[in-house]
Length: 95
Image (cartoon, rainbow, N blue to C red):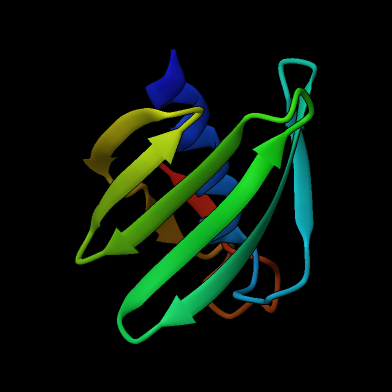
């Protein structure tokens, strides 16, 4: 279950622009707030869910590692594709 939630968080983060501003999304009635920062070739997603459980995910070389509520998670990063080849729309994450 935590892997699914971490994947949802990452999918949202990958689809959003890499900004230090706080982003949020809701999945299955649970709201997550997070920030994405870049440190060299690593994207770092830090955040918290509405119950206060913290998470940190690091994305590098197509892999994700980190923790959600104190539990280690690791999985392949979702692939990102644009909605339309020549569109300025936000990219869509796919798995």
